[in-house]
Structure formats: C-alpha cells, structure tokens
Image (tube, one colour):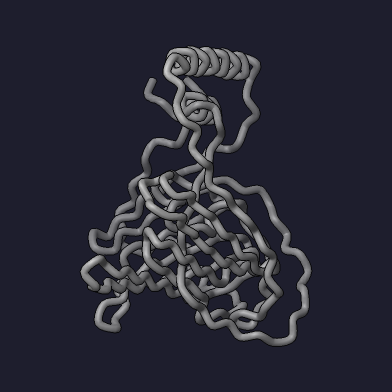
Length: 293
C-alpha cells in the first residue's frame, strides 16, 4: 500500500519535476472600495492545514492553506464576469457565495447562481479540520458526500528510497528527451514577465485590508497573439481574518471579472450549519491514500 504523499511526489516527477502551480481567478474589473482610518490588526493564529479532496478545493480558496482559529465570521461575496464577443454580444454572469467560519476553523461555503435577481444554491461544502473531513451537500438528491483526510505522516525510509528512484528516472527521461530534441535547434521564445506592486492599505467591509497589483505581460507571438497582452490583477486580503476581501482581474483573453465582499459579520455562526442535515444519505468513499487489498 502506497502512502498518499508518495503518490503525490510521483505525480510531480511524472510531470517533469518542475513543481506544482495553480491559479484561480475570482474577479476582474473596477471595484469601488471604501477608504477610512486604517489600523493594522494583530496577526491571526494559524494551526495545521491540509487540502480537501481534489474535487472540492478548486472552487473554495478558503479550504487551502490551513485554518484559522478564534476568528469566526459570516460573509456574502459577489462575483461578476463580463465578456464581450467579437460580434459585440455581451455575456454577463453573476455568482454569489456565502461563506462562514466558526471559532474552531470549520468552514461552510454556499455557491449560488443569480438568475433574474434570485439566488439559486448550486453547491454547499463543509470543511471540518477537527473531524478532518470535507463534505459536499447535494440538496437536490439529499445526499452528503464525506471525504476523510488521513493524518499527515512523514515518509518512511522505504518511501524515501522509492521517491529518490523515481526522481532519478524522471531526470534521465528528461535528459534523453532534451538530447533527442537538441538535433534541431528551436528559436528561443521570449518569456512572460511579471511585476508586483504593493498598494496602500484600505478598509473593505469594515476590515483592514492589504493590497497588491500584479501585472503579467505576455509577449507578442507567445500564444499566437499579434501584439503584447497585459493581465492586471488587484487583490485585497485581510491579515486579521486570513481571507480575501476583493479581487479585480482584467484579462483580454477571458473578459473582466469583479469580486468583492458585500456583507461581513464577525459573529459565531449557527453550529447546525456545519452538520449534515437530517434526512440526507451519507456517502463515504474510501479514505484518501487507501487502496484495495
């Protein structure tokens, strides 16, 4: 039986060993933020931390990077996506996300689509760092899919040996590929560049927020583009609660997206919100890292 950590390492090696990167866009366009007296808060207490199941982490960034204790909240976040097609047609989609966290770091996220001014819940997830579970609630069929997270364990000497062996094989495969492709020199393409600028602190939804602007420049020809493209992102985070409060992204390839927290209350949520509702059928897949005997 192979440990999950070994499988993760093998996956990275198979991909070329260059590392793992991920990005999620949450908003783009112009956001109006209220500015008031700015007072830096004390740093939050971070404890532990692990990712939920791969099918859930992607849409809720609060599930990544550990949990925060003693900082409960409830908030409403709205994301608007606007795309203008070549024929002038404008496509606008608005999503609403309700998020809450209790003092133990449990998190609940309700993702909704707004149609004709009415919010329709599409997905509910509950992340429980105490029970080490991630639960997806499927309201239409009254089912709860519960994923149990294993306790993190350091690799054994045998696992470390397997990782080293896989790393050597991956390096040899890359060297062979480079040697084979080296017979026909390819013109070197200009790489994309990125700059980061720190923004002045602001108050957003009554919270102190620290911001930064990231400008990614995509050179002409890198993606078939006949001229340089610029992707500008501005993000604002609360160091107190450890959450993102606003984000704007202006990407000529994707359109404009705008995300901002419109309501926020620093109160303890109802404990029932972090429990599976009565009448739901509970489905518990095999634990991550387990294999059939």
